[in-house]
Image (cartoon, rainbow, N blue to C red):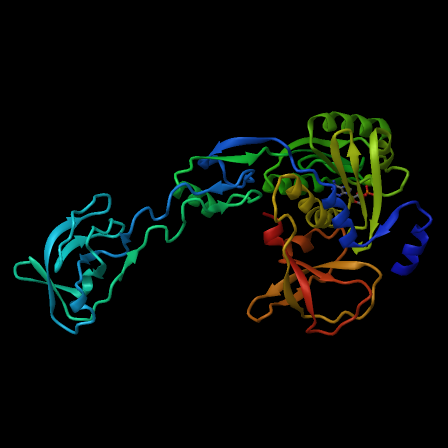
Length: 421
Ligand code: AMP
Ligand code: MG
C-alpha cells in the first residue's frame, strides 16, 4: 500500500490531518509560560531562563585603563608624530588595582594591564617599544606616537543604564559572566517546569529484566527522561503503566495534579490497546493529529486539568523525532525562552529523491563537513523503529512533501547536537 492509499484509508477516522508547520504553530500558540519566578545566585544560574532583564548600573570598564603592560605618557602636542628619540622621565608606577598620581608634561608612569590611566596621561606605549635609559630613570621611544594608544576607555563595553541581558534568555556561561562583571550577584529566573511521564505498552520490560517471548525493552523511557533532563525540567517518572483504561486514567490523574505538562509515549494510535486517547478525553481535552510527516504521524495534544498533555507515538524513532520537533519548542516556550524554535541550517543532499511522497520526511543523515554547504548522506534504514539511525546520524534532513530532486539539492537540516541540548 502506498502512502496516498494509507492516508485515504485513515480519513474515515476522526483525526485531523495537518502539516508539520500547522502542528508546531498550534502547539506553541497554546504554550503557557510558567508564571512563577525565583532568585538564584550566579553559580546556580546555568541553563535557567532569565525572567527579568538585566540593566547595567555601572560603566564597564568603570574607568579609562591600560590595555598593555607599558608606560602611560603625558604626550605634548609638539611631540605628536615625531620620528625617533623622544625621552620621558619615569615618575610613577601603577599596578592594576591602584591609582597613580597626576602625570606632568613629558613624564611617564610604569603601568600594567587594567590599571587606571593617571590624570594627565594621554597615551600608553607597550613596554617592548620603550628603551630604558639613564639608569632606568627614563624611557626613550623611537617611533611616532599618537594620542590614546592602548587605552580602553570608560564605558567602552557597557554604558550604565543599558539593557545587557534580555528576559527570555537561557543563561549560558558568557551571560552569567557579563552579569558578574556588572556586580550583579543574583538573577531572577523562571521556575523549572514539572514534567510527568509514563509509558504504555504491555510488551515493555525494563533493561536488566529478562525478555519473555513477544516483549521488548522500554527504550522510550530513557530517551524521553534524558531529553527532559537536558532541557532542565523537573521530571516525575511513573515508568511503565499497564495498558488498561483504568491504569492510564490513574496515572494521568496522579501526574496532572503535580505537573505543568504530562508526556506519554505509545497508545495514541487507534488500536484496541490504545487507552491514552480515551483516558485523556475522559479527564480533559484531546486533539489527535495525524501529522503529514515521517517518522511520526500520530501526535496527541490536549490537557488534563491544569496540566498540558502531549502523547508521542510509540515507535522509538518517531517518539524522539516528534519530541524534538514539537514537544521541545513547546517546553522551551513554557519555560519562558524567547528563542524557543529549533534552528536549522542548509545542507546539500548527497542523494536523489525519486518518489514524491505525501508526507514530509525527516531523514536521518550524516554530514560531510569538508564541503560548503556540508553534504548529507542518508542512513540506509529509515524505519521508525530503527534507533541505531539516531545514534549514527548528525541530524535530520527535512524533505518536503510532494517533491523529487537530484543529488545536489539544498535542503533544511536539524542538527541533533543542538536539539539534544
Ligand atoms: P504504539 O504506539 O503503542 O502502537 O507502539 C508502536 C510501536 O512502538 C510498537 O511496536 C511498540 O512496541 C513500540 N513501543 C511502544 N512504546 C515503546 C517504548 N517505550 N520503548 C520501545 N518501543 C516502544
Ligand atoms: Mg502500544
